[in-house]
Every structure is written in structure tokens, then in C-alpha cells.
Length: 142
Ligand SMILES: [Zn+2]
Ligand SMILES: [Zn+2]
Ligand SMILES: [Zn+2]
Image 1 (tube, rainbow, N blue to C red):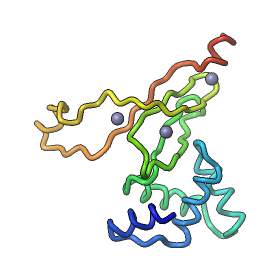
Image 2 (cartoon, protein in one colour; image 1 turned 60 degrees about the horizontal axis):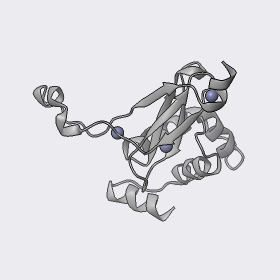
Image 3 (tube, rainbow, N blue to C red; image 1 turned 180 degrees about the vertical axis):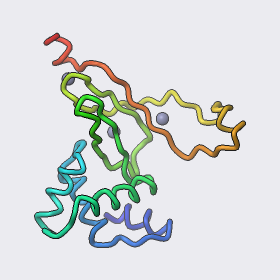
Image 4 (cartoon, rainbow, N blue to C red; image 1 turned 45 degrees about the vertical axis):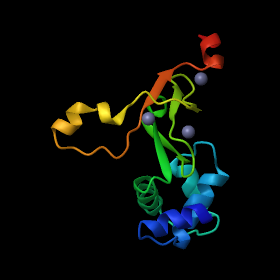
């Protein structure tokens, strides 16, 4: 929790009880909980917290680079989340059949080669990239 506290403080934010609860839920429900999973977990401690509040806190934590959002096309366009603060930048393999995500320690993006972004006067601060395919279990089932 100290890592997150420092990260939030360094960007001028406080570790509010809500943010702490969302981070704790992300850890408890790891790997890859949905916003609904996080909401369910936080509600056991704070029954009044709304799903909107969870989304608001997640959005801030994503902006601060503490949380990563992974888009899953297989589950009706849902998203799952993971804590990335203090971890190496990485990407994900997503199975189109079962919707499961896996971390992969690989990044093909070289930010300074994004010439078109520079031409447009656009400053890139982050990116997300998912690889879609079939996991071992689903591949053999096809
Ligand atoms: Zn699969
Ligand atoms: Zn990951
Ligand atoms: Zn990358």
C-alpha cells in the first residue's frame, strides 16, 4: 500500500479510504477482476459504494499509472483491471474463446518512432495493446 500512497502523493492526490478499498479489492480479486468484481468486494466493507464510484476511482488510478485496463472482446466488450504500479510495462494475450487474459513481457511499441503522433503535435504518455488468439486449452477444443 505504501507504493501506491507515494505514487498518489507525488501526483498531488491522497490515498482516500475509497481508493484504498479499490486497490485492496484489485489485489484480493487478482488476476484480472472486472469493475463488478471490484464493486462486489468493496461492498462487503462499504455497502453504500456505487459502481459509478468504483469506475471513477479506477479511472483516476489508470490515469496515475497504478492500474491497467484490459479490453476483452470475448466477454461482450467488457474490461478487466490489474495493478501495474511498480511492475514492468507489459501487454496481454487474450483468448477469444474463454476471454481469459495473460500477461506477456513484451512490447513492440517504440514511442519515439511514432512519427505521426509527433507530426500532429501529440504527446504520447501511454498505450495499450492486446494480442488476440486462442489459449492452449481452447485451441485443442476447436
Ligand atoms: Zn481460452
Ligand atoms: Zn498484466
Ligand atoms: Zn507497450
